[in-house]
Image (cartoon, rainbow, N blue to C red; front, side):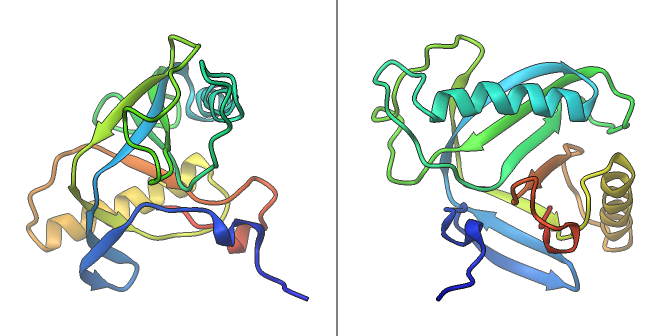
Length: 178
């Protein structure tokens, strides 16, 4: 009998850790492809709406009626630099497509709101944390990351990307976020 978590076989993007200090890492990520949708509203409502749109695509509502495996994380970022919980701006929510697909091999979308996009190799400054994905928790992690940038005199693009790795039924202390 196995007690592996349900998400243990979920594909995640490949990366190399360049620097690690406590819960903060600098990583080089491999190129991949995302399915992305932009929605307006507060973060939680926008994420929920976008998730349904993207899930519809990977569950087979695409031109070839092909089901696509779910990967982790679900990515979300605000289309402006400063994150505030009250922001009613455009949120970009995306699923990373499984690595077995090339851009040309992915099924075409039926929903014009969904955009397929190639991501080149990239470098991220990452903070790992767990718990509920509350706006307060996200702001706390962001402030810790900004402090790290300041004391280490790093140059970064002021673009905040949140990454959520677990299904909603996962116990908060087991959840992974970046």
